Image 1: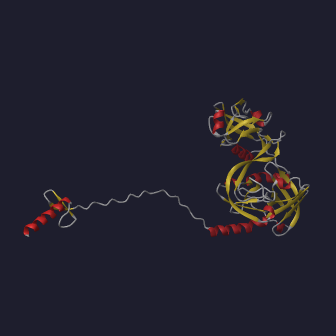
Image 2: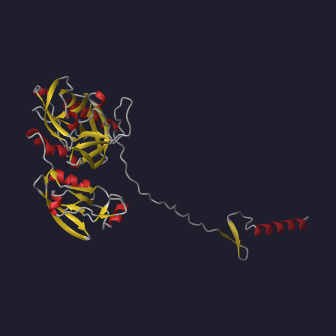
Image 3: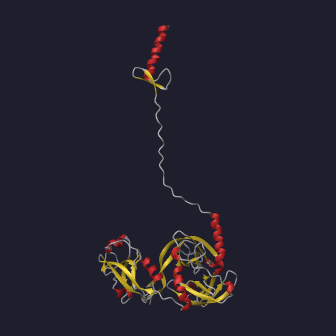
Length: 393
């Protein structure tokens, strides 16, 4: 029995050696001559944490924003008016806003164009006939006047449209589809847009209206001439037009979320002349240029850089022609595109990335008779060309 027990013990001991175990527990391993030594405690590595850059996003305070919008509407709406008009072809409506205590109201030119009669309806319920004092078909602006008690006149403040930023919240107030006093909220979607003027050259080509603000604040038929406001209640634009993609069941254009407003700084510049003279005299270059350049056009024309206003044509005898600016003359493989024109890259030292930059700068800062100096690229050479501006014919 003892021998049998001894054999069993030897077998168990051999098994423990093979399994790297010890009769004293798993915390030991056999080393060398069978001497049991404690297993060293291995250091546990610290977890590697990779810091991901984060952008702090501040959640808007909806309650404060709501209070701001309510206060803005209560402050501004008494100065916004509904304009009803009749023509030989029927009746229509638009919007406008008071700009002083003398009874002057700003609206769009297309609202008062060829009208037989005008009525202005105030938020208070006061109504009055109005007469047209001045029109600006280039930027689609007009000033009308009313004779009402002074306490009915709540002038709105003109803000600085140059300070307006893309993404900034804005409010439009007007009378879409005859729904008076409607307010909508949106953002500035773009700056420096170009629209066609409502006035054309002798050949039938429309002049360009510059420094236009794009917004997604809902603008619909009847909003024309109403104010586009920042959250301080300052007018930064005059709502003018919408980009449409279809017609409603009532036969009117439908809003697509792309609206346009004449900048307040354009209005600020032309307003005194409209009141005093009945018109505004815009500076005139007498050239046609591509607003933006595609890579295909750049490569086809062989232009040395990718930005600028490329002159396609100059009006014979116009200011640009007299100054020696050149349009394209050499045929290319793109129909209607001619190479060899000047590329305007700066105006009075201000960079010109697109023609819209040039147009906005000129309209806001220059008058007929002023000199504007262009930096151009011509056949690989940079030149300075001064141009004496004329008046739009």
